[in-house]
Image (cartoon, rainbow, N blue to C red; front, side, top):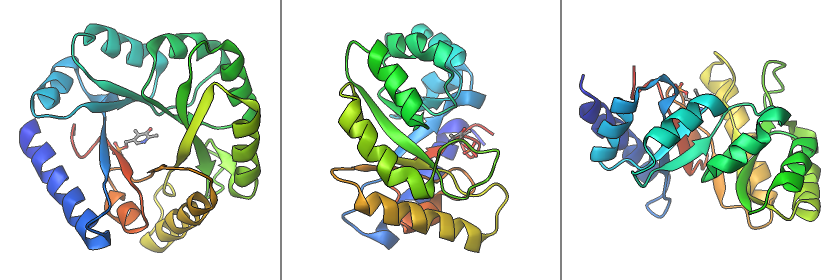
Length: 217
Ligand SMILES: *Cc1c(COP(=O)(O)O)cnc(C)c1O
């Protein structure tokens, strides 16, 4: 299938899930371009897509620099090592989804000259392979980052569904992330849902979905 058709099909599915949840609920799509070529990103741009997500700083830098003449919005999704912080800040991402600890937040805060928008990544399922703050510490960590890191503008949460989990497990994760999100002061972005589970995530209130495979198979 050509890329434009895949995008149209994906947008229809998102729209359907959105309407089933609430007509007043707006869902943003971040096209996860980690599997995509520069040409594919340009092709989606020509269809109207503006927000793209990358997992690795080097690849993010390469794509963002090559496509700097386009008004794209870049999202950083992947695990961030402390030695990549300066590079990340240079790239000025629209949103950092993978802020996974108070230590990382403080390290970014000391180096940042300008504010950076970020989401606290929460490891809701508790799986060892996953990054993120444990669910039971998330409220406290969110408050501490807000209080001690003036350069970090927290906008909400990022969560991932369980790896290879069944629907009931995914529902538990999304529902717990949503409960936490509702407790946060002034949070506006709940980033959850990928190719395999974005409709379910929207049913639990996700307002930003990150989709790669379903677009760039
Ligand atoms: C790769 C990735 C995605 C996209 O996953 P797909 O299954 O390809 O849709 C979303 N979020 C994060 C954090 C990722 O690493």
